[in-house]
Image (tube, rainbow, N blue to C red; front, side):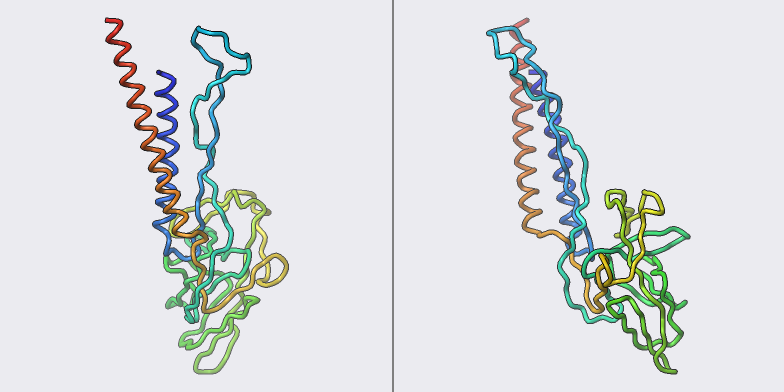
Length: 252
């Protein structure tokens, strides 16, 4: 019974983590470029029976529960929606925008940008997109698929810079920092800059935004499954506790 309690407790922890992960995904259903997280589980070490009784085959073992192995980010591309806004950008394929704030570099698939008073192209949270600078009084912006940025002011059209995209040798080393940006915790030489639309880098689409890479119905189904599994573990633990109480009373 003690083993049943421990196994149920491990199941409760695992399903709680699964519920929290799905709930976080659902909460970001409207977050531009959001990438879903999926928990992966592993079985705890199998153990031979510890009780004495009828002989059992030597290979007989019993499970000891489950644990969370890791939570993996899935970086597959989401669908694209049309906004027709000049500073809304999406990436058709692989790659990340490189953003900076307080001399730190971050990466994101969130393509909602604005023009600040200094002529920088910035995200909703104030992160600066490198390689672009606008003149005062800019009235129109055009971003080509290869990242070339052209703008217009009262003096006519001018070149405002070039947007590069970035890829990583180990996507697993990207860490979510909040505000829809990631930091890379690998070696600097594992970060590769490239021209949009060339090689393995996706092209930039102006006037589009990328939606999250999951379907809401799938996450809701996962959430219901996890809640049901959590309830089953609760009932198992309650039953084991009642049986343990009966055994203790019999000893008295």
